[in-house]
Image (cartoon, rainbow, N blue to C red; front, side, top):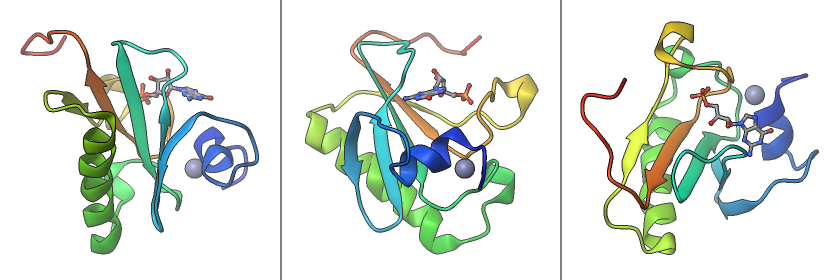
Length: 110
Ligand code: 5GP
Ligand code: ZN
């Protein structure tokens, strides 16, 4: 999708620190990390949010990618977050899963 920053990262039109890639997903370090490890996993195909995701293969690929990324990073304890919609904190409207690790996390989140 034009003018989508995460599509551009997935298509390698703009540089990013890719930490993982497979057929359907890429993962890269968050620009503004909220924990010592803060990685974003995204589908290569554009879905504005989880509400638009209608492909079970991609759903499965995203969780597989989370597992592969955490294994590769040697992380066993981590927080995963999907913000859906503005009031939930979504600011980039290309579906992404946050992986946060390296510090304790509170529950419930703010
Ligand atoms: P959201 O608030 O939508 O759940 O998360 C968006 C995340 O994307 C934020 O953590 C923000 O720091 C990150 N982000 C926004 N623009 C860029 C970018 O151009 N590159 C990278 N690597 N991360 C970005
Ligand atoms: Zn996109």
